[in-house]
Length: 90
Image (tube, rainbow, N blue to C red; front, side):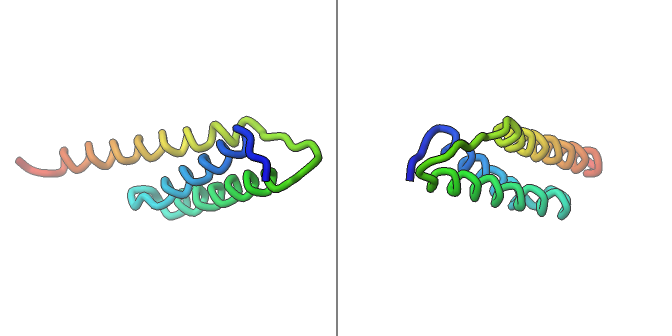
């Protein structure tokens, strides 16, 4: 296998998406979407790394989607935390 930065980042991005999908604060549809994208990204990284010849491209969304997923998780977590503070009578 030949590992360049592209393959490594695709696999890391897939693992990040799988970790975000495991967060219970997200809606089930979002969790399923993030898990599916995580498997696909990591699988594509391994697939390209196992090729010995040919030309493969990595679209930019392979690097943007994991960052967006983490941002979405942080937003939902913050909203839930803020909502629980305002609902809790002091």
